Image 1 (tube, rainbow, N blue to C red):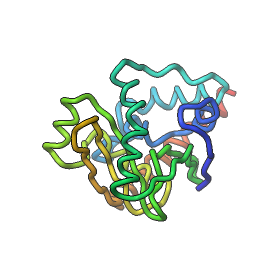
Image 2 (spheres, rainbow, N blue to C red):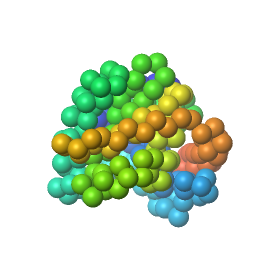
Image 3 (cartoon, one colour):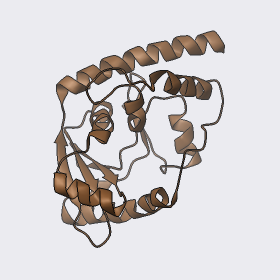
Length: 196
């Protein structure tokens, strides 16, 4: 694995991710059950376009998303103070061609993935006390890319207690995910060769 040291969401970070399947988008390749996603083809076309030189399209944003991005640093600071120190990282690229942007590395074996959702969603996460299904592919994908043993999923909302759920490697799911990623990258590269 290679780590590209840069600030996340910077121009350098966008460049590093361009044309590379990334853990935050693995749900567009495979479902949380390990079967192909209905968004697979569209995501492949998007990555082929980037490999051909197109700039990544602007992603959707709103006030809640912007607030979540701002609160991420506060959540990371809380975890570093109360649990273990976190080292920020840019983009991690696996030797097999897929990548991830974890919200932080923890010592030699861990990662953190921070979400700062709206209030009602944070309360729902506190009630359920488990990794939300929406993030299975991202969290396990980050473990695949980095080779680390656990990923602490954090849900954070100011003035409320945070949720910290330790998620260990699910080797069965990781094996399915890796198989789907390798097939996806093979098709992606073939399509790129055809269109360049």
